[in-house]
Image (cartoon, rainbow, N blue to C red; front, side, top):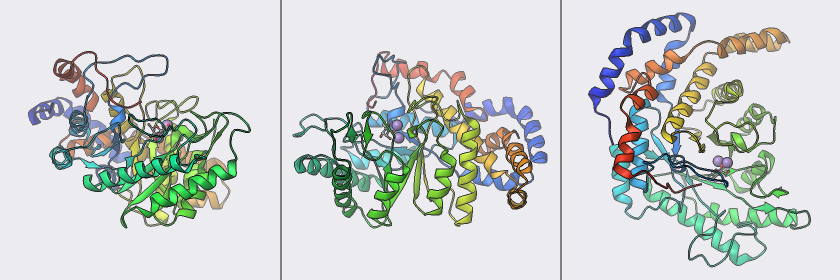
Length: 424
Ligand code: LRH
Ligand code: MN
Ligand code: MN
């Protein structure tokens, strides 16, 4: 399903005069609004193929209907998101949830929607059909070399598929760890994992990166072999210059200072990318910015400061991806909300008066430091984000247009009511 250009145009026309008023006000309020507009226009956020269906929980799953049943339909859904917001130009695939048999056709289809392939994700946390060895007790860490070999081979196969698709990064998230004290020798598990990662690393093309994603707990509840940013950084450092840490916002213990982690990883040149989401408890995978928008802003504040310090390109030097999926919303609406929240936090961070902040920090003027940050956080940048969309030919209000055009109804009509999308 595709929107007709006139559907977007007439939607925008209706909202235009109100938008113009808001925009005029915002540009008066924000001194560097022109620069912000350019940067948010360039910024693109990868959509995970597994978030297009309802994730469910282990207690149940409720289909919204019309979910994509194959990669072609997933690309169509992401193409639609990109038409609506002009900020979702990348797709992150999960293998083998996504099967890519006819690669040239898939590549061509993605290009038709203006999409490219972001980091590829491997999966050694579930047993696959026809697989010889089980991952019940881990994959890259496994005590049995044969199991490790099988998991390594899977990752190399994912790289191969990624090369064909034009991706240039592999994200490895491992469920490896232990559920009970004594089950695992921590050091051996680390060493086995490192050795396995080294074999995968050796198969990376010269222009590829590997992201080592950490997570504190789940599915293992005693230890996780890549459990935090320290462990991930250890692996990344030992592997080499193509290896980086990937931060998934939901993967920390409660109250972790993620913005500080981001700042230090950037300092070390070892931050590779993000999985954006939000959470109240653990790896809840809720809509970005729905619980702790100030934290999201503070993270972007460090990102902007750190990337500028290192002369990094905001658009390309880190991999920006969403990783959210849940039970009660229309997944496409949820993704529109996540992208919007990310763009807002980014725009707010770009509006921070950095010179004033540096000076206030230098003078230990704590109150002023806080005022400067909160001034940026409390300024309404939404008109700038909307203007960036308008200029790109997308919708002033993507969510409103999605609802006006009754897209979900149409998807249900085409794909059916009781659908299952591959993924969690
Ligand atoms: C693990 C995780 C990881 C997986 C995805 C499905 O919790 O964040 O990124 O690949 O979820
Ligand atoms: Mn993740
Ligand atoms: Mn997760």
